[in-house]
Image (cartoon, rainbow, N blue to C red; front, side, top):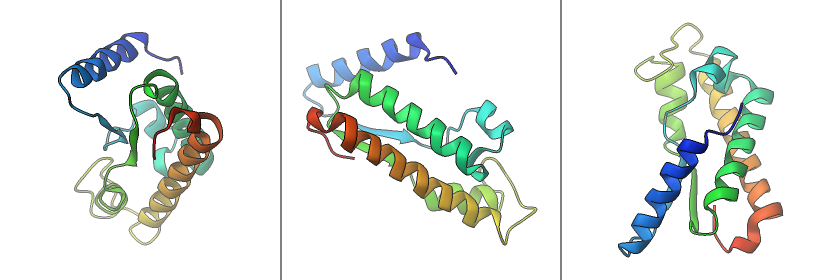
Length: 132
């Protein structure tokens, strides 16, 4: 989809405010907030969809914020997202119908999405001097 410029502006101003206050930002790209449109198309269970979408999202963040953000965390608690979201159903998306497969597929695809973000950073943004 299209980049939300209002969102870019909000986070850019937030990062600037943190730096002005002497706080070094550490940015987590995913913290259990998968857009509904991606979930409807398969979400973490769709390898091609999620790897490409996450890579595009990471690239957008690196482009807009990487001049000021030097520490990137790709996924917050992927075990929780995979197991609690695709096995026990305690967290979004609340799946419980294929407990023997879905948590492993989701977890595998999270690792692939992480690897894609790292690849993009190393190949295209390493000059920014940050770490993923």
